[in-house]
Image (cartoon, rainbow, N blue to C red; front, side, top):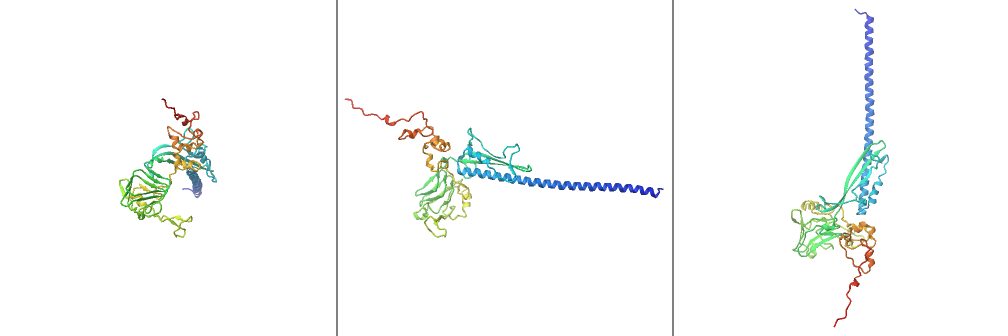
Length: 390
């Protein structure tokens, strides 16, 4: 039998061990709690940094896309210097640097280049959209933006876009402004038709207008009037207008145009004729169904797929005074300094050129002319009169 003193000593040792175990447990819980809080703060900071980097990259991508679009709006065929200027102007955002992992610029625009550094276009068939089925000169552009925060959070975004040049000869009829059909007898046309402004479709009484290929217009498509504003009934333009649906022909009703032509109206709503007037084209709410369903998008305008005008490049690249007929004209003197304009003229694409001018200098000062050879004076080729021989 143990004495009371020895039993007390044994119980005191158990209490000490229990206290130590409880202290270790509390320390473990405290360390875990501290680690959890610290990890949460780090994760929150990392998430905030990644969010800032993402929106910084997105802002850079949108700016580069907008700058590229603006450049092509103003210049059909920009130079390498103009394109290379775009990556030099990233947006200025606090705490954001456009820097790639390897230390190079994180704001880059890449495209295939020729030996002179200019963009290279390839002939491809356009697969979809309003110009689907046509051959286009397609140039791809790759936009890459890498945004980095002060805490080295990094996000990279990449976007691929392309420009498409469509040779105009693929259109059967290309109208730089309005285009109007109102023949008296039957009229059949098998090529593609495009108007950069409004398209007026009418046909003489008892006649039929047939457009067998795709029809597009940047403006409105009217079946209520002809281009001078006269109504169809005014001169018996009440014939049938057939448009290709992709599987056959369908008659376009007089109420199925994209809008109704009402002529000039003042701001107050009264008819007028003057500089303060504007054209009024009330939209046909049923047009999207007619255009996209009844005609399977073979008859479309700005409301159903034609998002921009088709500008002839020489109009943009010249000194502002050119017009589409300049594609057919020979170059002006000194135009060789602007090879983009010269390259758009049919003159530069011809394998043989015969030039006639009153003055030899008018020919010798043109581009694409061999200055080592003088023009032939046609007056020296005339046959002199010879006295008859008896």
